[in-house]
Length: 274
Image (cartoon, rainbow, N blue to C red):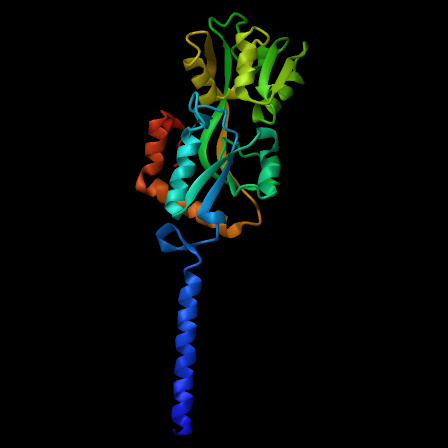
């Protein structure tokens, strides 16, 4: 065989092997939004950290371990758009950001208000907007209408929430101090109100409204929601590729109408960020 023909065949073989190798490598990546490659997720699963005790945003169906709520539906829709499975990792609120940073899951979708302090630790993509509501006993026996009316009262709030900062800020303005209870879970705060140990509970407005609806007329929300701010999908700062993929998936869900459907299913259309 002539030398030039041998060299030509050799080059062709090398190119063919390289093509097969590239095809094989491509199989290792998940197909995501519009066919784009999604960074590898463990076992092809998007792991979502959530404090699943905050109805109607994220909670367990009564008597079961079935997670439900707006945030749960959103996480499921995002995973579907990315072409992967989803797993929700129930995590205490006070340690949820450190757990994300320790890579115990991939993202947080758990009614987390975006604040400057949190943005120093993790990145966010806004997906909902909510303010704070004040929950009291039916009939409002303490005549509470606003934060200023909490002075001299007992108030229960969930630890680590924006509501802790709000009531502590108000306390600095009070002549008579607010007695502040901080509890691990929002239902525990509501129980303090039911038992008469607290005069009010501060929580995100959709949650306070849901607590009132489920109270059989024992509780009510007073006034309008205040200090509205966006919730964000929380992500590690070093997971830039996954963050971009989640951002694209959320936009796709909004464009398709799935996002609006999810909000409508929970009667929370007013919280849309579109």
